[in-house]
Image 1 (tube, rainbow, N blue to C red):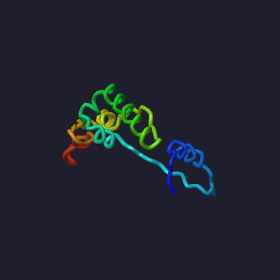
Image 2: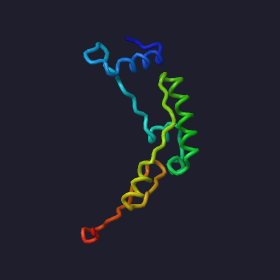
Image 3: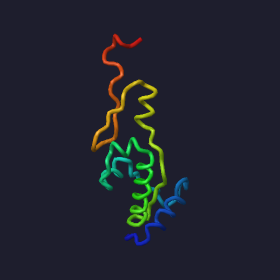
Image 4: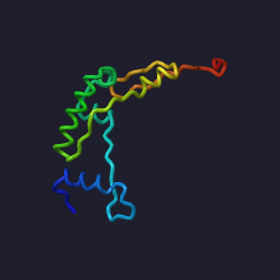
Length: 113
């Protein structure tokens, strides 16, 4: 089967979610922040540290996926590592080509209080 109307496909897909015993199996498409950064050739550090830049990039990418795949996604705030750093005490480490990761807050068992 060749899909000619992707928008209609995703509409029918949303309708099939929750249809137990139905003939259609819903699919999900996850295009994460790493994919957005790579697809748009973005500055990863800026993407994860500049809220407006992140949201503008997500909107721009959503226009592309809407046009190409009939699939769009809305704005989303990715607290991720920044929130974890505030909870666990590690410092975020940013990379030019990957999402941030936390540095170790505890280096040895003796440091656990």
